[in-house]
Amino acid sequence: MSTARQNITAQRWVVAIAVMLVAVKLTAYFATRSVAILTDALEGLVNVVAGVFGLYSLTLAAKPRDAEHPYGHGKIEFISAGVEGALIVMAGGFILVEAAQSLFQQRALHRLDLGLWLIGVAGLVNYIAGYFCVRLGTRNHSVALVASGRHLQTDSWTTAGIVMGLLLVYITDIRWLDGAIAIGFALFIVFAGLKIVRAAVAGIMDESDRELLKHMVTLLNANRSENWVDLHNARMIKFGSVLHLDAHLTVPWYLNVHEDHREIDALAGLIRGEFGETLELYVHSDGCLPASCAICPKKDCRVREHPFERKVSWTVSNIVSNKKHDRETEDGVIRSQ
Image 1: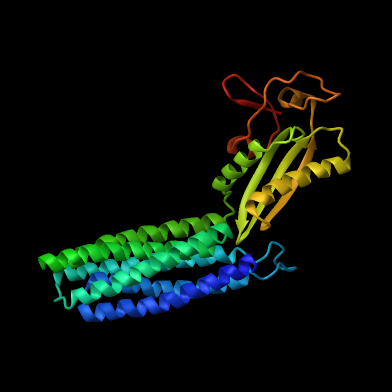
Image 2: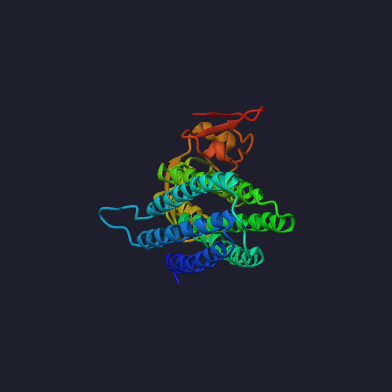
């Protein structure tokens, strides 16, 4: 099964589970009249709306590229994540208002034992579903599926906190704690929603993924060919489930076209072996210059003009630079051409 189809199937399960759990939570609310449980139920409604939008975005993102969308349709996932985050923030704001009112108009609570059992089971199901969504979304590089999973996990932690708080209410019969608990978790929900919106905006703005770059740098340093003299101007961004990497690779200037392409293919094969076939790689090759000799460890170079001094380890900072490196000085600063 393709990664796109896996993502869509998982999101369908998210929607189905969200519909089932919101019914359970609303039942718990009407049985107890607890504003804290209402907090959980309203977030469940957000899960349903966000899940449907996420399913649509994943279906659209799976469409192949066309003349109007040469990079595919993957960015719809960022829009989906942004909408989901905004809905979470709105739900948190509404819950804050309801919770504040409940502090001044304390309601009688009923059948808390039943309500606690219902939302406790719902929270456990949410966490399990969220765990698998995050795991699959991370493996398939799906922003929308990861956002759905994080949302479900956030919902489950909210539920856990509400269960513990309402147990305290059940034991002490201090009713104002119901509203105070709801306020605390509403603030937590708003913060989680803002984080999702921030990540979505970063994707829409093509913000480079530095965590993935760190992973790639570690991989390349451990498997570096002696013909890979330098790597610079590297950029990695995500379009939906597809990773795009652009980079400039410096190789010995005397390699012919076929030898040059073999080095690029070796680099591409190494990276794809780690990140999967969903990676699109665009590598521009540069011929080395005399100033590169000091950092080039190639032992059988017949045209070397300067002795080898030291190997420059690649880091995120130096591979994203748009200039070639010529040597590493004693204090670790790299002079560039």
